[in-house]
Length: 532
Picture (tube, helix red, strand yellow):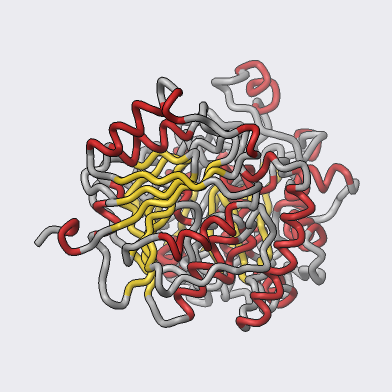
């Protein structure tokens, strides 16, 4: 027995001001379904003087004939005056003769298999089934997307995003939006909502869930939502006032349901890998300040090691949510506040945390003087081919001097970076693996890259050596390390400005990079002396 034989469905559409714009596309979408509804209830919410004579309209009359040709019996309902969509949907519960109602907006275009896919999820314990409701510029689902009721004020329903390709898994959700299939006899529309019916679908479907029925999202079913700017409920001049009234009613509903909306604490890290770790040094204090809130971190790199208390999203999601990200720009903050302290403390102050005390930490110094392993992190991100101003130009000579002194050199970094001669390579290691490897070393040596910031986030810090060229170790370094700076005269005037790559600006690179580093022999002698 196929789904059509087992279940008959009524399609319900409420329309206002869209007879000659998007409504014909919606009707054609209904006509072309592979599983067709047996009835179409069309509620016209236009003022009487704006109603349409379907039989005299060349497009609508043809669509009306097609509906009947495909045995979809159409009925149009004209209330005495404009009443709003909520009253029409309530009326549809008494007018429909089928157990299931397929709700569509008058600017929706369902794909041909949409209703068939939705109906395939019908079970005795299922009360409502929705699919994706996509805009004309659909985007992949990000970390903020949620169809759970406590996340309602994020405004990121999972139905509004692409979930991937191929056959996708269904899931249980708390509520649905816009278009869905639902059981008529258990539906309870909120009668106190205004004509615009703000939060109407959320209240309806969550009440279905509260009755013990499952609410299902099947991302294989797609409806395209045109978001028609003309017509519809938002055309009412009192829309904003009515929507605000409905929002207050909805908030009271949440309180009555015992739902506490999720509170989020936001972090935006739109800078380099080392900057991410500089913030991470403040993470414990950030969690303490925001106890009881979920942390939403928008990042360029995943440095949180799968921390279950943190949801991560992309910078693109942050821009979509906040627009301008200046409030989260730590370097802009340092300039505006004439900051002269450390980067770690800058993050602490910007997020209104307690002082960092970045050097008040558990430092591990290798006591085995026979340990001859030194870990090197030679490159800055993107600088594996010596094109970046941060890269130390004398690595091969320094490694040779270490090797001649009987040290074993482990090189860490990314695949594709230039391998230094005579090293043991540990490339593309996880941060956890790097921390474990560090415990086996006498010390580490790096340039002005992420490594010093990374080590500073570990429970036990392993002191190391940072070779500085143009960055100020008083801002970006840590005093338990050996910070090698040739001469302060090479420091950039704007320590919080952007770096230049040689490929983008070769003259700027050459001017700033030439002569900024001590030669390998001097660096080697400083390291050996420090290790004693």
